[in-house]
Image 1 (cartoon, rainbow, N blue to C red):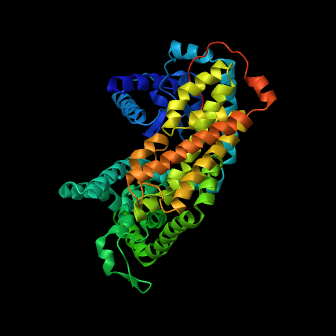
Image 2 (cartoon, rainbow, N blue to C red):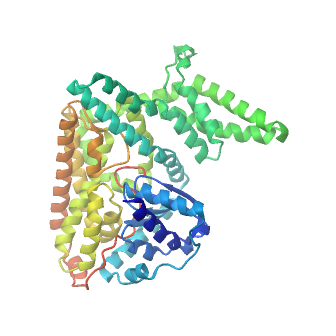
Image 3 (cartoon, rainbow, N blue to C red):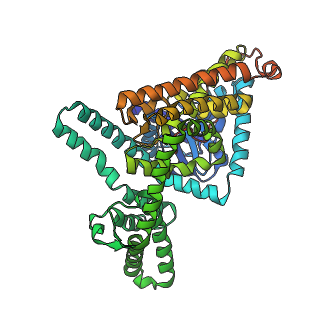
Length: 505
């Protein structure tokens, strides 16, 4: 979208979230505008969902507005400009048109959206456990890194394609440097974000984690072996920065205020750095190596079963909040092997949802409101933004959610079998899914072979999700309830929630 259109969307959103005075923080991930709000009761969710640019909303740790890839960055920038300039009116009444549109949403789509919202609220309450909160915080460490991972991943894929063709060796070397620079310092960024997320001084977390990638660690001997720069990767950086946070808090409690500025940073960096060198790097290196070996073995020996299980159960894992544990695993695999072989399999969950949605569209011929919801959400679903389809259509209906998971399992099995046969498909970055993942694909036989396997998985997921839903997704009672004539719809996307095969959001 143009800057003018992004600004108009930001101006429309601002009064509907309570105005500038109600906003404490502004951030974004791949598809969502994430707002820290002082009072969430001031949010007009119905009017937000009626905005054409809004694909859905998520009431989580932050209030999240799903705008889709590309649009979210521009709208976020314009919203920040509005807040910085003080030009936005706080708490202004929502525009009349969106409110009217929201009230005109026909009962079919409105009922499903309400049911999806209730499911989301119940699931959020069940997910509020210490372990799941910790996983969510760990995911929040990696989400800000996704844009750089995507950019470097695409540059790496371009460099690899040129190298395979034997074209312009000098440019290949330059592209390799561009794509590898960020990855070589990834531990520093992880350390910085970890300290920031857990309440420490971000730069101290980055300083302690930087020890891991410093070339001079090759001269240090620990556990009878010389260390290797980068040993332990993001796992080691995460552990080192967490330790730095606790060291900083401990030191600050016992050091006089007059000496804090000198003593606290010194103790934090000294003790944290030594702990990283003489313990964390070795232990995290063993864990990272085990993760890489496990992923390779899994696809080589059990690709069919692994794809079936991962593709079919990913969305239930999202509902349980356990998918967030996969983000550090993806990042570790990318850092070790150049790509993550798990993401293309997990992306098949979105393919199952797309096929399922098409079947629902055809089965509910007389439910104009639900069909309008599907029409508005389907393009985003093809690009990997599956929240509106999942929580606005398939999950509230019940049985179609299960048949969509069947489609995801079939697509995952297709990709898994290819990996078992020696053509494992990986992604050089986390974040995109659906058709948006094609530029990031990598594999042992080149981009064309990887794209063919991934496309085959998507088509399998679409087809099986469609057939399973069309023939087994509805009982007669369900058809009698939902396949009823309804008034002309207003095209709007329903409430969204947890991310699909990416991640991390």
